[in-house]
Length: 224
Image (tube, rainbow, N blue to C red; front, side, top):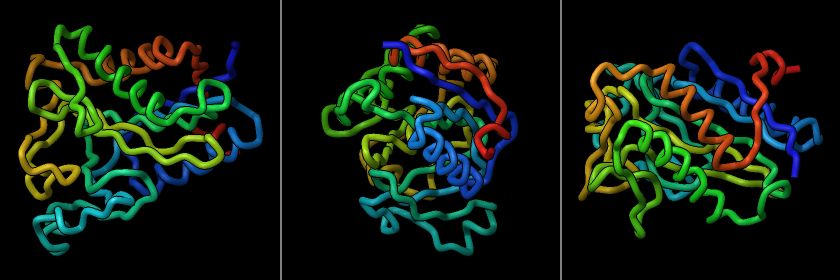
């Protein structure tokens, strides 16, 4: 099946609210049939987001400390618990009409995990899954978190892949509500990691895993 898919790469970190706006506008375009899928690849300014499973109890500091760190706090409609987004982390928001692929959310989440697993394979890093916890793991360290939402089989939210993040920010929370394991970043395993190269590989693996070509468009197209 041929699919009309587009990708937007943001070069500067976005505030979380701006990222939501772009997701919502992309959702409208996919809903209207202007595209089968729109992939947003970006970094966020520092933010903790709380999913539908809750997670404020896993925030280990009060909001005054967050202000001192310059970290925002948002409640969202994605699945999952509390997580962190910030510079040096690839956030992928696939706004996909799964009717054009497969109406199967567990399959879709596995595909998102596979994208990151395949990127890490290019760096000779063996990554995988844990049965109890969604996301991508290198041994007992989580390198990518996943949280999605879907409405009428059109997806929102996606994954956050740590490339060269400030891991001290993760110490302010129990990431995803998990206390027994820690987080990892690609730069733990690869010296002088090139962030834009990893973005490029992520885009390539989306094409591979989802069997679709993604034509690059300007961010302004999303807002028209």
